[in-house]
Image 1 (tube, rainbow, N blue to C red):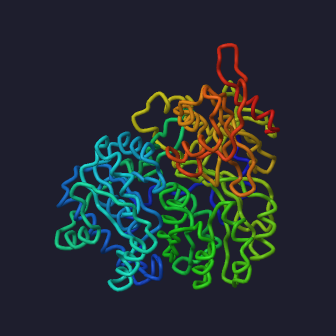
Image 2: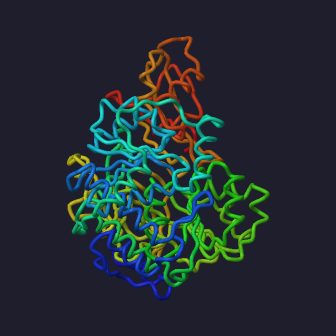
Image 3: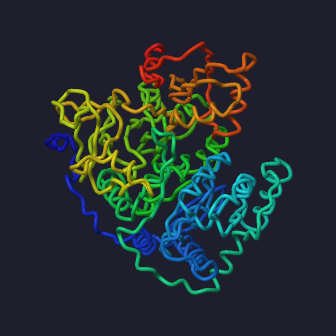
Length: 556
């Protein structure tokens, strides 16, 4: 397909970008430190870290990993934290020391955490104390040898930090009892590292930076191998896209999306580290009143989020009373932006809500609408610089412009493959290097893309992928279940939600029992919101359950 989208690029955005400006993410960060050393890099719960302080603490943590843990180059380091100051310190320290980061969702159940730790072969983990009880249940089955325990107040100063840790643990009782062998306090790792020499590592572009886990149609969570080159390429692409509209060293971005998710990792963390922005970390974005209270304190210029977050804020009276005069860019990704939300956001803030599209496997950005767009257009935007897209039918042949087909992408931001899963990697890549996205799209004559359906059965809940096989596997574990199928249904709050259709083995089985069972084994957003009991499920002649027929019955 010809790059017809180039005609619609905003002035100043190039067709191609230089992806070789930096050798590694650490090198990119060090350049930012040299330019913005005294500027605030992160704000969290009132505490601030400048670029210089972040550089020092990341080096200290890297020195601890090198000298105390003596991990071999390329070892995997798991991070299981929400948006707290410890995250960028540990992440940058690990990358600069030549290790690969494995991001873990703090809300994982023991079953989910065990799979990710064992599959990745992670040798060390930094985990917020609030979630240590989950690690305790799976540690024996994992490859973890070293445990670092962080606490919410660790970097808030002695008085405030001690108070916060006391309240979190003893007043709010947010830290379930746990017992782990020889854990090291996060603050001690920094003290030990400060007394050691950090030995710079010549990290290369093709070295693994992240094992970023994503679901699969088989229900098995897979680690997308993202190299330094992949992330740096996406940074260069996004940088070229936003540079006409931002001022380096002067932006203030709010990060309510979790940094362990690829969207926030690249878009919020690395992109704005590169341009010397200040970044407001929101630890618990579900607490909308607290989030709004934080927003009121700072001159936010960039707001990135998902549709559900924008919608929740628009329904908050205090948010509607905020001053939006500094806001330049509002961008939504992770899930479809709804027109009603985009229209209300524009009316309130005066800035258009720009939609983008990406995948874990693409680091993540593939398409973005021009930032000078003034209205919602229902499109996921244009392929970004140095990115090729084609739309193909089931036979792998390009379809005509305006026809539906599977969106396929090729570019320097596309992963090298799935960790230790050559068959799954081969299934997703085509002979000419294009990667199948599983999304059905249409391109118009100006190069704008629209997602019209999903080829795969994946359900998108608040920007997070939920794969039916995983939900079905958990439901089928219940002794009262004979058969089960799961599909996505529309949900005003989360975009989509999970519904299960169940054939009972035990006539006394109730929906409440199944929901409780799922809550024990699945992260909250994967838990079904609806249960429908049936006497049988539609199947093919070979006995495969027809999820598509169930979706059709629901008008989906």
